[in-house]
Amino acid sequence: MDFVGVATDHHLQQHPIFGHPKSLRLPLRCIDVPLGMPRGVLMLLAFVTGLTIDIFSNTGGLHAAACTLVAFVRPYWVKITIPRSNYDELQNIRIKDIEFGQFLTYTSVLVLTHHLFLYITESLEWSETLLILGKTITNGLITTAIVIAFRYFDFNQSKTS
Image (cartoon, rainbow, N blue to C red):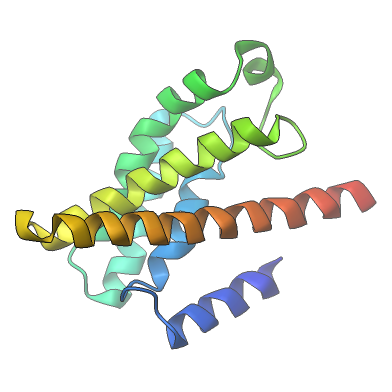
C-alpha cells in the first residue's frame, strides 16, 4: 500500500494534472481517519496535513484551508450519507462495511469540496469560473478513482488476511 502511494505521488509529480499533483491524494488523508476521532483533533490533523503540503509547495496555506474545511464538513456528511445503524458499528468507512454507492457518494462529495475550495481560493477571479469548475470536476473524478482504488486494495488485503 505504501509503495503504491509513493509511486502514485512520484508519477503525479512528474506529470501534474492542471498544475496540482499533490492535491490528488491529499483528501484521502483527510477522509480516511477513524469515525470516533474528536472534531478538534480531526481538524488539527487535517490542518497539519495541508500545511505540510503548503510548506513544500509554497502555496501559502491553500491546502491547509481546504483540508480543514473537509475535516469540518466530514462529520456532518457522515451522518447524512451513512445510515445510523451502520454508523454506530463502524470504526472506519471502508468499501467492505457499507454499500459501494454510499462510499462513492461519501468520497466524491468530500473530494469535490476539497478541490472546489482549493481552486476557488487559488484563483479568486470570477472570470475563471469555467476553468475552476473544469479543474474541480476533472481532478475530482481522478481523485475519487484513486481513493476508491486505494480502498479497494485495502479491501482485497483484508479479505486475504
